[in-house]
Image (cartoon, rainbow, N blue to C red; front, side, top):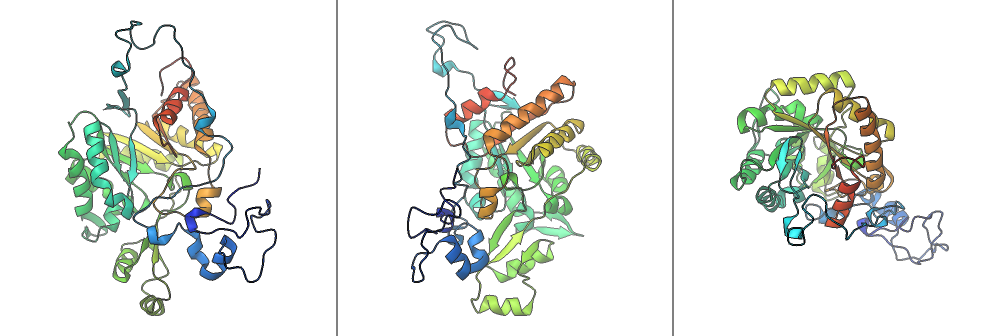
Length: 400
């Protein structure tokens, strides 16, 4: 099936002169010399790598996602209902009413009032700008919210000693904001760590100084399977981030680059995170050390990699006795990731859930530890969530 959005996308504000484009390339069947319309090919020729990212002028005030048709999504499934009897409650017309539906659950041993969690919201500007509302909403709803990656490293007020973070105003603020209205029982605040965070000792700081109970290890960059990016429009901050150990492009310490930035040749630096490359032995030992440091629960967050990697991930998680793991499927949103990665990388959410369930069945048949599993990626309403939960079991047991 041809890709309807090849060579023209709302995410990078490109379009084609005609609608009946070549299904092979997405280009106009007749490409004319004096065309005043910018398609992806044309805009790439003028602006180069800028075309890789969602419209940069909206960075910090937007999220972006894939607009690719994966041929299957939650709308392809129908919810089958019945009029005979009831499940989960007495079959009584006066009792089996929707306000009496019990939607409480547990995730990784944490009791929740609702069957949904707020996944990692890290150092991107859009996450920071919206943290208060999401943290308060998560707390009063009695669910989990996760402080995402790079928060300490991106915080200009963070303090370091020998390369380790000893104070972060931003991380402390986010945790305190959630706990202000948290009942102390339902839900939890989780701190996520990636490669740079581990090097900074963010987990140790969060556990020892901020009394965080749950640490989440992150593999890769969610649904996009790459390193995380943010745009930096301040030279001094770009230099600070490079000195802290981040990959910053172009090199903000290069005098020629500094001059070009000041002259307006380009407007933004890119800060990239590294992609972790775990192995079984190292991962299991890492989780053991994390528990020794005081983590009461350990979660995992990973993306939608090839099926063999999904299987290995769950095997490693089982070996390490991980409490819970989140898989992020292709099609979900991001603060700032390359458009080609959102479009062309990783497994769509529906397919991913099927793979995960197959792997969990194998673990169950072998009597292995099975972590709780959450699925993320493109959920927009309650019917989609319901379908995922309904399909998230082996047919004879409650949803996993």
